[in-house]
Image (tube, rainbow, N blue to C red; front, top):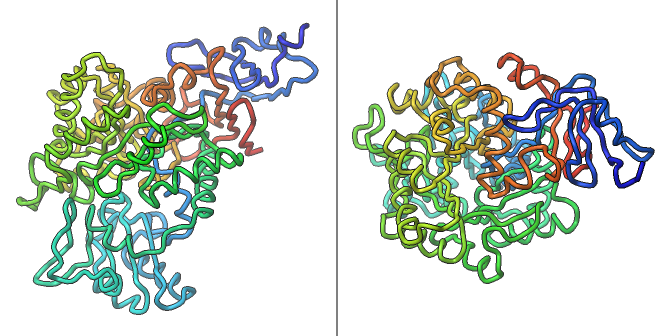
Length: 541
């Protein structure tokens, strides 16, 4: 046998799903960083030579590496320094306060105490933390506690004072300072959060590189080999681009990253990136410049997503509209003309309508453009919006993990009619709109199993079914997590399927994701091996 015909790596003795519509294989061969062939054990055995590394899958399930099409990698890595306020760690406001006090006990007075991950809809009383209880518990430290969605932060009086916020401070554009009965509540929504974040210590360059590496290694443990970092520039501007470049050069970038550039007025990094030639598509298979992100609204659970109809029990609250039409349209027109795909944040139906109108203008000005403009999250739509998106070639980029984590909250704050129809992934799949999926980590855990469970059952963590008509088949769910994620990044010809010549990114799971019961996928399944670029980069055994 000629050595050219010999594989560098062979996986055999398992069940290998190579992509939607393909027959299941028993074995797969890798040469360099590409798939060489797949098929029966007998057929692939002929490709094994003296230098081939052979892995016996022992009946396990292998598939293309997962692509989390929307998360925040740097922020995920930076979580290590914050108090864990997620419902699992702090299921009540009392337990959250106790965790903050424990951190304060080991932190010098006057230094910041930061937490991330609370969801007041999961508390027994459903109430937000308040400035008064934070003041009483932590009088000597400035405190900021970010909601899971990232669109709302609650702070104490010391933090408000340091930020120069008092009862007379005007709401910033696209932001909201919480007030009640002539007093500050400590709540800061959307752009108002920046008043506090701008005075907090910024991570150093080395800490950002460390966060990229730590966040990426966390993804590999779950079989995630590709992701979109959904707002590069949000933590420290262009420093983040430099940190990614350093991480790649030094071999400290564990996963493939499609980098979304923050394009919001006042914090945009698009202009310096453009001056450096960093436009959509530039880069390598490990780090590539993606689209530009503009925020148009907030989150539904935080009651800041911009809706056409008001929130339940708040007849005057339609959410937060971040930008007027003329400003958004000008930005979208300008960034598109500069060579960027748009991947803007829109959750409420009013925000999605605004984005569709902005993208329709781009399509009308240049009907033959090749950009795959996306709407990130795209939570609350109707048939008319879907048809307009389809006509304009707009991709929905939802996170089905939201159904599992926040579905009950959607019903609570929006009512059953809107809540149960949220994030309609099967509708988009039937319309061939190629919906992707992901976690929005650190909004949700990057753990893919709640996301898969939600796609297969549409059940929340409480068991509520959020629109049974939106259930996907196992193969459709896996396609959303692989091929559709690659398509949304313009990379479907190089990854997302395990076919000859495509990148050898492979995840091996303990359960057969095509046939296992959803409850087993959620509670008992683990990623046992991850292969990136033909190399084993995670091996649980």
